[in-house]
View 1 (tube, helix red, strand yellow):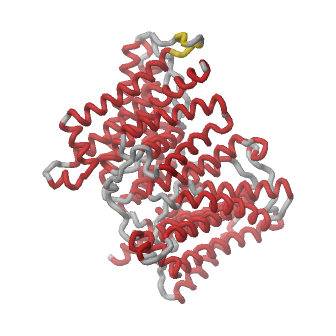
View 2 (cartoon, rainbow, N blue to C red):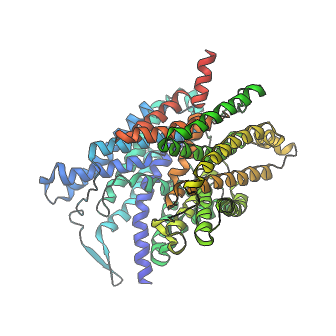
View 3 (cartoon, rainbow, N blue to C red):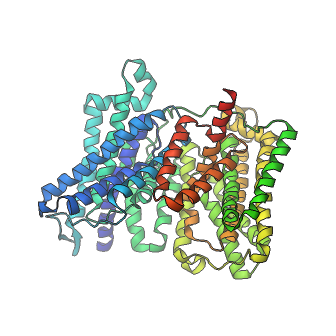
Length: 612
């Protein structure tokens, strides 16, 4: 029992960091309705700023607890200032955009901030000293527990109390709460919402920066902190209920305890337990522990799926021209062959997501789960049984079909951010399984040495990719013209009316989800064959965001949008990465500009220019 009590204290200490992050994200979402994927960047900024301040910029301070705390405060203020700049430059231009575009734009912001911090602070890890005066331990139940972690445990309820008093006892806080409930009505009463939104973003980013600063005595500050923490923050926010700070507090306690006890008793399944906890909560309470129906802000305007050019002759000529151009790449050399193959696989992967999003309005943040299942299924079938490429691809698709058939029944009951987070939970479970089930997947060493494609079959494989990519685009266009496509769009635009009309809404959503998962698995199997190896990173959240990125860059409602998006993303990653260290930041800037200037994507922007 003593051991369990100590682990519970560890969980409560970690819960404080999660709560600070989740409270900031909840506050920003509650007022601005922006799902801020860059929130982890402000956590990282607070940690890096504080770490450099106490170790490099002012080491002459000596062993002073007051000055160390002042440095932490400066880290939080620095994050708040950065948040104010981000709100002025980017976020206020997204207040009228659907959540999906906001997510991708803030993902671009996270890329830019990460490279900016790498340029400003350097790429090295920074090990900060332990907090002065709290370097020792106290004896509890015959065991020793760090004094500093007792302080962090106390900070969680104090921050919650401070936020409660600020939101309920101050005029500004009361207006923030009113904006959370009905921003339009508040504006109609003559209250300018812009200062409220700016204040919410600044306070939310300061809380994230403070959370990063508080982590320093326990772990080094690195440039990988942002993605790691933002995923768990989303888990806490969604588990607690969007817009509820009380929900964020209790969800942080729950996830913190699950995390600490999981490390102690189920170290190989810790990450799985965290996401399964969220999944169970959402199955029982689809809006989270304390979630309420909120004004979700602007929604995407119902759009007709663009299949331009409309005339069949022109459409056929477009397919033929693109097919000839892709075929000609084969004779351009090995570099361009490899680049084109990467783009074609990403195109197929993107089409699988676009079919869900454009026609059905279903958004997945974890589509990499099925991509990874296809990749590992093909790799393990070939490695263990020596099967050829067709059977390996079929094995990967079968694995994804089996998982999607079960998981889809749960997912389609949700919608919006909750559906997206459930899919993300599945992807993280797949990633954790691939990382920790070493006997099957090889862990971080991956599955290597695949010979699904050899020199004699490389030409055939390339033209197979060309054919499958063009077939995927054609199938998407055909689906958009079919009765199923019309039903999907009806479910997307008017679900209540569609159900009243007798359409099987649940079955329609389930069917497109499963079919999309199988196509994503096919792309994953082709990826494994092309690369000759598979690693757990194929299930990472970044892989899912790549699929989202290519769909939105090209245009979610454009038939050839994914083709344009995948070409831009693959080319930018290859060409800019060859001689420019900060190409990810440049790509992030480009993504932000596109999401602000033309939410309909590059092809939508070109169409507008042509009409003008």
